[in-house]
Length: 419
Image 1 (tube, rainbow, N blue to C red):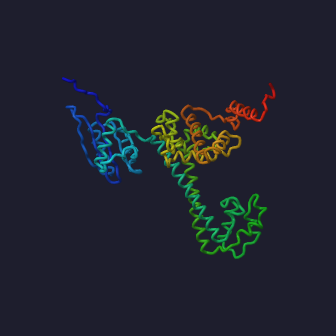
Image 2: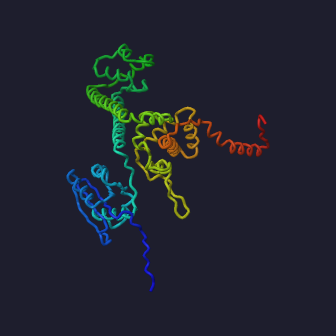
Image 3: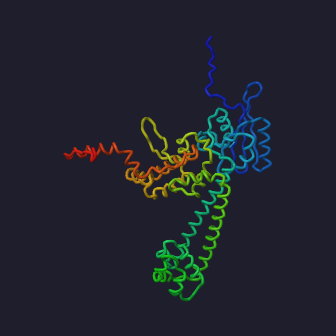
C-alpha cells in the first residue's frame, strides 16, 4: 500500500486569527481558530462602529485569545478600530491592492474570510503604523502642510484679483506679500480718491524706495468697491492662516523638542531645515525598526524605480507608489538641495539631467537624500558634504582613458604635467 503524502503546502502561522473588513458604519469579522479536536472553526460576526460596538469586538477577540488581527479599510476608517485594539492584540493593516485582485470574493463576509485565511498562513504584509507619539507628530506636520498650500492658493487668488483690476504691484515688487506689498494693499483699502507718489513713498521699504515712480504707475487701475471687498475677505483668510501656521510651528517645535539633536543633524543636509526635517522625522519615526535596509525604505517611500521584468524583458520601471507624503517632502527638499552652490547634489543632478531628464534626475537626488537621512537616523551618523568635485575624482581614471583614446584618434599623446 502506497504511503499517504502528508506534506503540508502552506504552514499555519497562527492557530487563532481574525480578519476584519471595515467600512464607515459596519465591520465584518471572521475569526479562525482550531478546536480541541484539531479542526478549523470559523466564526463570523458583524459589528457597528460606535465606541460601544468596538469594545464588544475587542472583548470577543480577547475571549477567544486572538493574538493578531488583519484589517482592510478605505481611507481613515481603520483608525477607530486600531485605537481600541492597539494595546491588546497585534494589528496588521493590509493594503487593499495586495488582496483584492481575486475574483469571486466581492462581499464583506467573503472579504473577511479571505483576509483571515491569508493571515492564518502568513501571506499578508502589514503597512507601517508608527507609534502613537509619531502619529501625533504626523497629524501636526500634515495639517501644517495643508495650511501652507491653502495660504499659497489664497495668495495666488489675491494676485489674480489685482490683475483683473489692472493693478501691477507684483511687476515691480518681487514679493507681493512683502512689507511694501502689504502696505500698498492697506493703502488701496483706504479708498483714497487720489494716491500720490508721497503716499507710495511712505509705503516703500528697502530697495523699493528707489522705485516709487514705477510703483505709482503700477497701482493705477480699475480698483472698485467690488475689488476692495474681495481683497478684505482674502486678507482676512491669509492673516488667519498665517497665525495658524505659526501656532502649529510652535506646537511642533514643542512636542518634538526631545529629538532636537536628531533634527539638527538632519538639517545639516542641503535642502533641509528644521521644518522639513521635523516633517520627515514625523513620517519615518526615530528608530526605523520597520525598515531593516535602505532598499526597503526607498521602496516604501517610492523614490526608487519599480521592478517589472518578465521573460527576460524589462518593462516600465515606474514606481507603483504615487502619492506618498514622504516622497513629496523629499522631492521638495531635493529641489532646494540642487540650488546649493558647490554641493554634490547639484553636480549629480545636472549630470543625470543631461541623460535622463529633469523629472527622473530630481527623484534620483531625493533617493540619495533619503540615503543620508537613513544613516543619520539609523546609525547616528553626521552628514558629510562630498562637494561638486567628488564625481570628477570618482571618475578620474575613466575620464583619463577616454581623453587618451580621443587624443590618439587625432594623432596626439597625453603626458602628465608633473611626471
